[in-house]
Image (cartoon, rainbow, N blue to C red; front, side, top):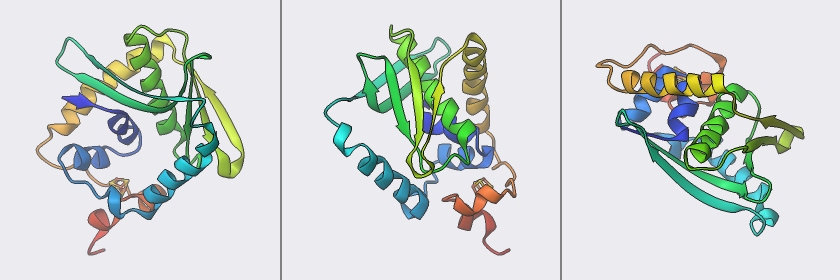
Length: 176
Ligand code: SF4
């Protein structure tokens, strides 16, 4: 199974969302929030494009899980990933997403990498690093993602305030 940062992000937000995504049901293109986030990402870093590298990484684990990631802004010299987000409401998911990138870089021979999460709209940044415990957690997450993806039935919806900004909102709450 291919696991990307999107899987890691969705796993930490909602297992139903992860299941829908891994089973080929994608509605991201209809989400204004997602489109807004992509625009923010592009405009926030326009001036930085020359200073940072976009890199694509992959690594195959022994248990037939393939990890894949695309880091948009990587400062090679300072070993620093820059990831910008629209809001910090889902900060835990954002943190695990960049920890996944750091882990992928370490699997590809780059140690000592850190990440900066940037929230330009609220003028906040957060530094993220990867610990041994984080690596253990990620390895459990990879296994759990496989299990969730292969469930015969979609997990229950989470009835959270975050649902209203989720691209699957209409699908989950149609008829209510
Ligand atoms: S709308 Fe809520 S329950 Fe449905 S996938 Fe999104 S976060 Fe999960």
